[in-house]
Image 1 (cartoon, rainbow, N blue to C red):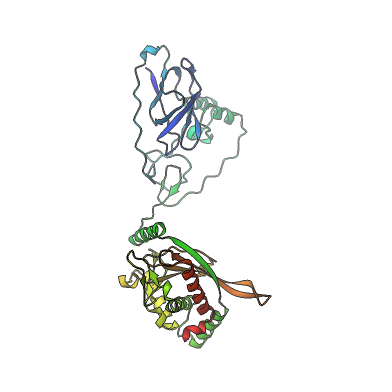
Image 2: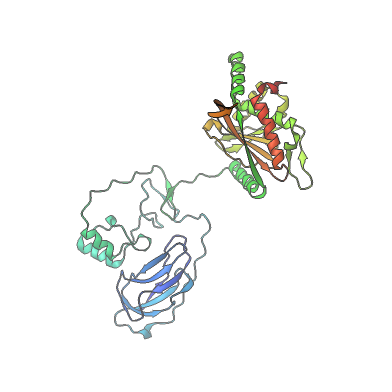
Length: 417
C-alpha cells in the first residue's frame, strides 16, 4: 500500500519548517538512505533522508512552501507493482502544540550512567539508523554503536557505514565518566538534576525581576582609599584584646549611614504621589544564606557605635542563615549595602532592592598604584558602585552622596564625632 512521507522533526524544538526544494521528482525510484528533499528549520537547512524504498508517486507539498507542520504528509511513495491510482488524497497531520518554555523531553529518571546517546520515552538509549545502513552494517559485521551518524539528528546513513568499513580500527574509547545518583536527560542530551526553588528564592526572583524591569537604574562608581580605615580597625581590635572584632564591613555600614545623615537627599524612595525622604538611616545588609539572599536591617545605624553595629550584623547574619529572622528585621530599610569584596570581586553593579532608591556594591580592597602630588604611591583602594533609581535620585545627587561617603571612609575618625 502507498507509504506517506511526512515532515520530520529535525530538532527538539521544531514544530514546523519550510520545504526548500525537492531533490527527487515524481516517478523517481527511491532507495532507503537517498536524500529526497531539503528542509529549512528554525536553525538551519537540513537534508531529508528516505527511510523506505519505492517510487515517488506524488509530491503533496510543493518546493518553497513555508510553515509546513511537523508530521504533515509531504509526499507519497508507491511500493513495487502499485500505480498512482492507489494514491488517495492524503490529509496532512495537524501541527503539534508548541512546546512550553523549558519543558524537558524526555523527563524519565535514569540510573547513574553517562548520558551519551538519545534516550527513549522508556529511559533506554536509542540508536537512529536507516534500514539500508542497518542491513549493510549487519552484512559487514560493523557495530552501529561505533559509527557516528552524519544524517539528520545524528542518524546513521549508508555513507557512514562505508566510511566505517574503510577506516582503520581505533583503540577502544574510554568510557565516559559515570554520574552518581539519579538525574534526568533533557531534549538536548544534557544530564541535569532538579533543585527546587524555595519561597525565599521565588520572592527574591520576583522582586528583583520587577526592579530591573520597572526601575530606571543608573550606576556611579567611586574609588576609596582604605589605609586610614584599616589602621583604625587594627588599633581598635588590638585594644579590644579579643572582646570583640570589627570588620571592614562594619565601618562601611557606619559610613553609609553617616553619609545619609549628612546628605538626606539620597535617603529616599520613589512613590507615585511623592518621594519619601527618610529621617533615619536603616541600612539593609545583603546576606547570602543556604536558602537564598536576604537583607536584614541595622536600624538607626547613624546613631550606633561601631561595636554595636558589629554585634548586630553578626547576630542578624547568623539568624538569617538559620532562618530565624522576624519579618520586621528584614522588611523595609532605606538603603542597602552588598559587599562581595571578601570573594575578591573588584567591582560590580547590584540590583536595587525595592522600594529603596539606592544600593551600594562594595568591591575588594586591594593595593594599587596611584598618583599623589606627582609621585606614584601604593595605596589600598576599594571600588564602590552605587546603583540608583533615577526617578527619585538624579546623577548629581548620587555623585554628591558618594563624595560624602568617601570622606567618611577615608577619614574614619570623623565618624566618631
